[in-house]
Length: 179
Ligand SMILES: Cc1cc2nc3c(=O)[nH]c(=O)nc-3n(C[C@H](O)[C@H](O)[C@H](O)COP(=O)(O)O)c2cc1C
Image (cartoon, rainbow, N blue to C red; front, side):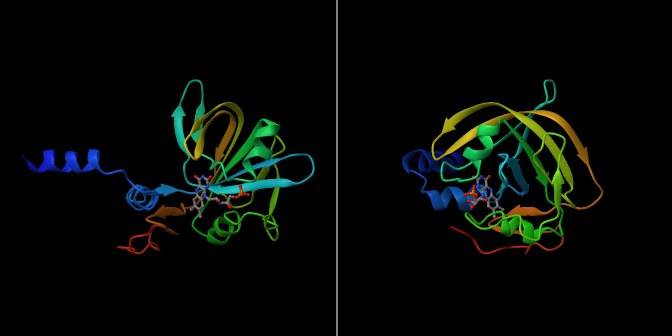
């Protein structure tokens, strides 16, 4: 049996644990966004790294909220949202929006985007979108959103890699395995 056959056998005969999924998929470095909305009562938002560009025409993006997200069901109900792609000096905002139940917008500078969703000052890019459709996917859902307007701003990205986040030069070269 060749080396690749052995690896394939192992992959098909062992069921990956959640911590294995997190640790291995963490090698796929991504940016970080805060998905926001406004239900007419208060601003809503959560940190999200599962953002992907899906289609150019029509303009679709996707992201995956956990079933445990408390903000997403409230944003979903409004049918519209804003994706704030974070800059490398927004680590504190990343951490603040990753905590459920906190006053997430405390000390955060923002104003309503054209669709009413919070636009966070200093973000690297701002993408407004309408909910197009959503599919269940295990312990998450896959949201596809139709982009209505978008703009980029000067700056450098905040990155997520192997459970750590920071700027291009701030990430540890070989972070300890997570999970
Ligand atoms: C870097 C980073 C990336 C994250 N990416 C996601 C994601 O893609 N989907 C998700 O549901 N939660 C993600 N989270 C976790 C949520 O931000 C966290 O569970 C948060 O408490 C959800 O808030 P909510 O309960 O107000 O929705 C991420 C957290 C961090 C720190």
